[in-house]
Length: 235
Image (cartoon, rainbow, N blue to C red):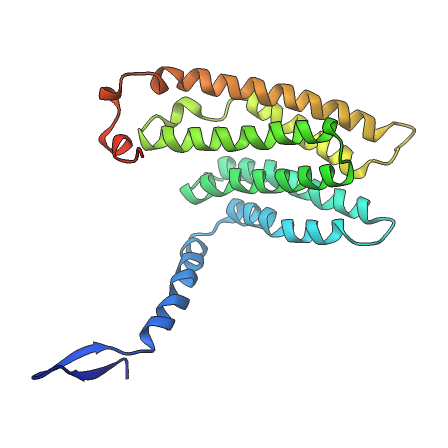
């Protein structure tokens, strides 16, 4: 029985069954998972795969094997490839979706932040911690900016720019080299990756300034011109 009768003086009234509440607690998160799976396409599957690779990436990183860094680098490289491939397929097959537009940058930021935390742990120096903090801080700042701009219908002003794409390419290449960190074909892979990381930091700050400059007129405009929703959300 999904319900039972409670006697409250008279007449009898229908009240929820005690089992209804724990079942609703289980049903709610399952419905959140089920909804995007209904419309899952190939680009979104690749993006979701990138997120699922993160716990594998973490587990392999801590394996006490001499070749763990090669496998860690391979997993990160696979994630980087899916980052390019899912966007390409979405445009090529006309399979862009709101879910994919939300999930793709989230997947990128999660795996990049994870890799940076690992590198700071392995190389606990200011020279590694500062670029890691700059990159992660920039991602948080721009994500907040885009969320706010979307609330007021100005999301297009802070859309991904070419400098942002170049930044991502330099960042991914630097992290791949730093994760591998062994000489390859006589090349000092770690040193090259370290230099590329600082190139990525410069591009990171540059792209952030481009986005902030585009949003600055809206950020500084008179409060009377802001939307009621934005004003209502202020503390």
